[in-house]
Length: 146
Image (cartoon, rainbow, N blue to C red; front, side):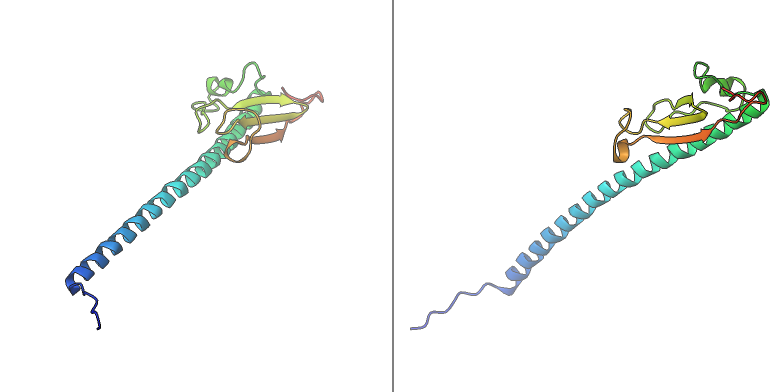
């Protein structure tokens, strides 16, 4: 006695294979979409860090112009807003995370800094501070110009 295995009609088998293929393709599209979202976030963070570095360079240029025109740098109390008041900058930029840039003058060095994505000192990766430091020119009397 031989028993025969019941066969499905070909159209039903093709329909089931097509549905399985659609499921696999749908999952593939979802995975690619998730990867695209992650990649865009990584690129956006790099772009923010690049913009902060460009802003710091622009502020440095404005400080040097101000120093040339007024024979001194703003004090830490006057801060960067003096650059706007004296028209060395049109407006004081905020960092890409909507925080003010820090300005300090210590030991013959000017430090401009963004505290990064976390807004706190230090940090790693996207949270790391972005700094630009440059020496202060000396005044004719031999002392630094504050």
